[in-house]
Length: 180
Image 1 (spheres, rainbow, N blue to C red):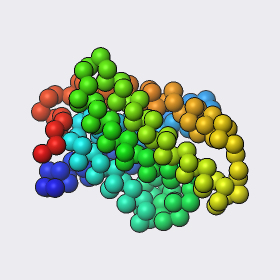
Image 2: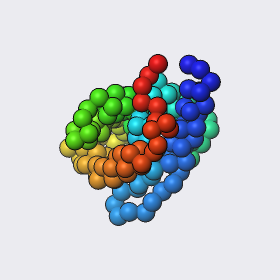
Image 3: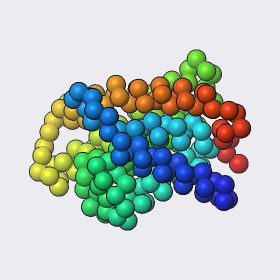
């Protein structure tokens, strides 16, 4: 990893942090710009830079900097119901970056579908475990799916659509599509 990779990864980790702090009031579901920032990282950076941006964000939060949504931080975050989502951002950004740049334009939405699928596949079991183990809440999987997945899909789709639109408007020299 060179200085440019580290600088771009750090810059986009700041975008992710800012995105996690900006809450847009919508009915029923808290909506932040975090997924938008993560998707922009996947589309505008190389795979290595995008993964590094998410890792920097996670490490900063784990060591105690209040970077996660709601200002949460510290090693206790691993017991939070949302920790699976935080971890899921790593494979999500990797999958979106990999597929988006390989698929034809009319199928690029599949990169987002795959990224979202991997995110929820990792997040929901951790959510279930953390709720049951650390919070004494045993919800049926169907209720978890509705409350923590289904409710967020519309805002995630909006974030992904906006990220694709923004990335498509960026000059080519700004996009770092290929890993070295």
